[in-house]
Length: 270
Image (cartoon, rainbow, N blue to C red; front, side, top):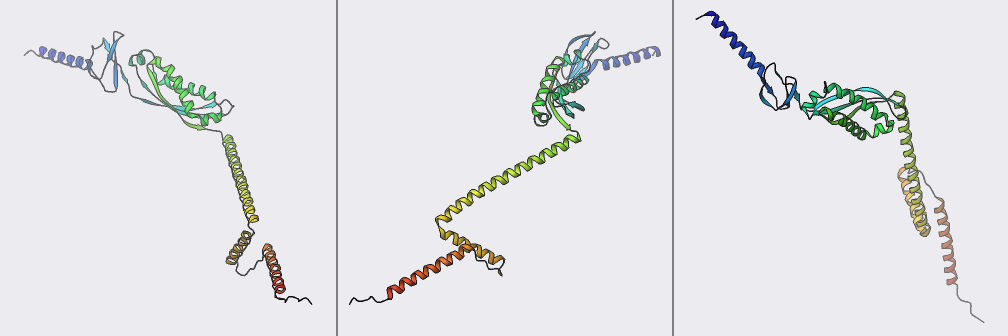
């Protein structure tokens, strides 16, 4: 066999293998391929085994999975002139593979930059209290603005969340003092309400005791029992009890006088 023919056959086989390798493309399940032929978009290639014409065709693959993109912390001045450092995170995915390749050069870098500027613009329209308490509304506003800008690039922003809000130390101390003053105010209000309720209850109790004098005496006796349990060497005679004893003595004296008058024999008339 002619050695030259053998070499030619081997070279042709190698070229065919190289040509075949350059012609085969595998599009994975979470990707789409954008087919360019001589620089023009021909169409989209779905997942599976795909063949292209080497040199003539180009098939860049575009991932359709959701991408997590952190938005780096940046200094922002709120509407009430407070400087805060805010970082966030955005989630986006490609919904139109052709636009994401043709309309913009680098989707990730573009969304990162537009997200930073949008975050600064939206937070700058809110005060510090609104930024801390209305994060859901701020997240929604940022996502709507990004959606309006990125749809032309074939990208959909699915979620934006503020991740961290760093306040100046002086503002942290001021907020701590404000929270402490708020707690003290609530404590004083609760104590005042308790005093009012207690005063009303004491008023009702005094009205009941005025209507039933014996109730006051029973309460005094109960107090004596409690004192005797705690301090059994102490004897206390409350003033109402002493007046009761005096009234009881007067009552007994009147009863004795009445009994004596009834026991005297009647004086017969002459």
